[in-house]
Length: 340
Ligand code: PHE
Image 1: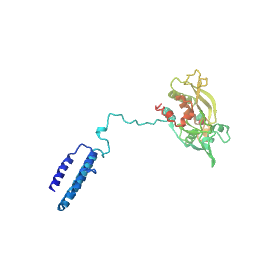
Image 2: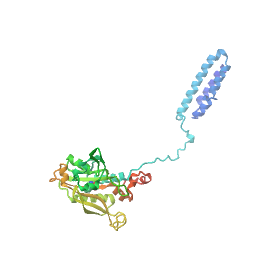
Image 3: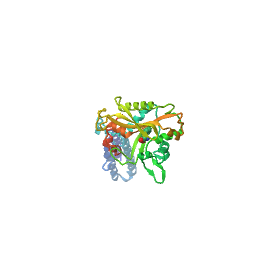
Image 4: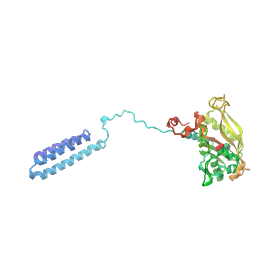
């Protein structure tokens, strides 16, 4: 009995002094199936009957002591699960974290927004599911107007009044109806058209349209605004030209071209040897549109313009196929990491 007491005392010393931090080797040595605690318990059979009770208590207390020390060591080495210092190389580089990148359409959209913001344009957004009035009728395209053919879209059988918007001009109608003049907004967003998908057309694309309505707004303001935009977007050397065109919602209307970014105007396959590439439609807001939206067309004038973000992006990055934008191929998308 005395011997057991002594043995336990010296083991306790040893255990208290155990401090190499390796909880697992401690567990194996003292608490494992072949460990010292088990071995001591096995000695119980040799203890005289009258001492059994006391010896049992001593051994139990010793077991608890050993377990407590094990918990302590485990906590000190981070739950005993982390690698110990010796097998960790802190000089190794960390695992690379793959970073996503913005979609090129978003990059260019944000760039367009930031340019117009500097001219005082605010961003306005509206619903992609529209009614006939906001998408067509208010914009001087009444039912059966031939111009509707160019913007065929997707309708809902249950309600022929609902459609997927063909341009974000519909957002401009919402803003005009609010009647807070002057209005100076750009409307970015997704639009839809019923077109066969090819390298140059898709059933949806993205637009930024702009609208400025105040007193005495003139075509000169329109030209200067768009000229500023082009220079900021494509560089100071780019030239612009306006060609007369037709839109039911503007009068006069124009198409704006920029000098070809590839050949600088000499003529190449991208500009079909003309030296010019079309980038947007624009014009002075038709008085009928102002009247349809409750704005006094005798007092106010305004200009509007609309461009396809895909088109601007294709020109900026020389992308040849529109379908690449919606295929989600990471090899294509990860090339556009820089903010323009
Ligand atoms: N809404 C026209 C379109 O989608 C673009 C445009 C807007 C043209 C404003 C002129 C003025 O084709």
